[in-house]
Length: 178
Image (cartoon, rainbow, N blue to C red; front, top):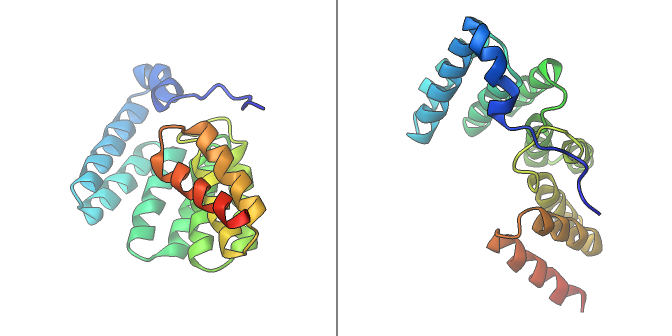
């Protein structure tokens, strides 16, 4: 079984429109600056830049990354709300579905989290595609549903064979089942 998606990159999503839409171009510049601030560990600056990006031209990406910054500050409800806004802007972007699932996992709402992770798996625009499988595997491990966990981690490995941590997790699960 293979994914039936042609992964659309960030650049492919916005490149053509940004050439003719100055608000979108400015929003994308601010989005990139927010990413740089995050990489430097300045969450407050990243939040400011993502908000500014949204003010110029709301993108699902900026809402999702703003939510991610909120989650790093422990503001999970606000993070979830930003992800919902991201989905309203672009329901084909998979990251906010996965992120909602992760935030719900942190809140202990595993069944609801699993529903969101399943949605992430089928989103047309999503990278890294293995994350929702890995996160579902974590949920099934917590629920002691080891066979399901093994299946999800196996699917994560299929999508990211270079991820050594996934292979280790998979081998540990196989040994538990034997």
